Image (cartoon, rainbow, N blue to C red; front, top):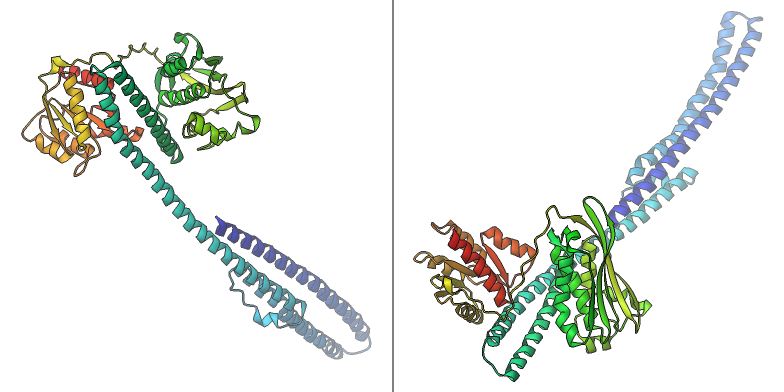
Length: 539
């Protein structure tokens, strides 16, 4: 901090002055002592010679008298010289040496020395002047430091408020998005005409685009506030990349783009890595490649660089034949909210956060996202990863059900389901989803407290619990439910717009069995219900 530097500077100056004065003090003492001893020695020699001359011609008493007469003036001279030397040299220097520790604090008092016209007086005035200047400068630096600290506290508060605002906004935006996307899925199950189906599909695409923008802003907010945590697990790198390619395949097909994939064999790519953030990086890069490429191709590859007993190093590349970037703008594209120019944003849309998020996630994974591009020719984004090998080979993931397939849970129609949700639209959406799956025995409560009281008289087979509700939230309600008799094993599934990894963990820590993020995707709800109800039936 600034004040520490000021104190350090003062201490250095004080130390320098102290050593200089003490050195001068020692030099003066040494020189005066040599001169004094020289005078005394010469005087003694002279007296000895005179005494020897007198001894021969006079009596011993007379000789002693003469010796006393000679030594008395000398003794007086030595005493007077010593006193003067002490009062005018050694004492002032000792006094100044004592004051040196106070230099820079504005407490140096050398008034009795500063009035003198001697070199000692000049030195005392200089020390007092240095003390005043250092004290003034230190005060200025301390004031500046206090102002900086106040501003730092204000910035931290503003930063925290912004992060909380972004998280709250994400939650508030996801809540109505849950209704929009949910009822779109309900409409898609109806026998609509061709034109109506197409219009519903347009609404769905627009809603998912809006959800992507919300996620980008939330991810950037989490990265800015250092709330992103690594969560490593065993996964297969080849299947992960192929899954990301599949997510953009339809959009690429609509634009007539060819997607080229060059991946190693699955057997070689079982790794221990942060699958969630790797997927986010790859999805952002592939989405950008498809978005900014109007004709040609998009290519993704994994280059095998090095393999050891427990570790591999690979380079993942995403190449496109799109609009490209000029050399001077390659670094700017990683800046937040940045696109090459305003026309790009108007033509292609987006927040300008995708590459920023990807770059920062690469940094978090110990890598560096790089770009090689030529305007009008295309771009190549690449990053290297050093990954630990998985201890056990990851099993091939089951084929995901299509949202168009029938989600039938009618064999569990006897199960009573309690839905704890405060938003009326979300209540109706969950009811619609459950009834379409053959689950019609449904009770609704508006908050966590009502859910706890409901269990005083009823015992459902499963609870769908929102986390953020008035009166009592879902986490607190879950903890209270777990304390009730016969409720320790009652399945509770979180339905929440809180999507941070730490918030997800809070759900499990509170005692929930599963987690579904809003907006709710029907097929995900079906899979989770099937898993929980099947396990409960077996137990």
